[in-house]
Image (cartoon, rainbow, N blue to C red):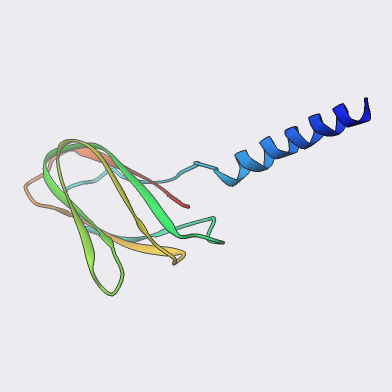
Amino acid sequence: MKIKKKSILITFLGIVLFSCAYDKSYQEYKIDNLSKSISDTLIFQNESDMTGVEIIIIGNVNGRGMIEFENGSGRFEKIDLVNRVDEVYKTEWYESKMLFKYQPMDSINEGNLIIKYRAF
């Protein structure tokens, strides 16, 4: 009987620890005015043991825009944004912050973007 209880306890603890290690909660950054250029920084909460980032960009752009994410050594990864946006950007990353830039390419009157991001 004691062995069965120990097995159940070990299994339960394993499930809890495994699920905590793979937390997929995202932080959000919203851009409501797409007619102006923006340069800002994403700050990652769980920076311990961080080896990469995942960034999801969703929203609508009435026209054309571009977003760039810092990719180390002063380089930027460019993503074109047109109409309905649903993009994912993943890269190796070891810093607690990442610079990004948004720039409208056309005259944009309306639209919004949500940037969901997490470190892993």
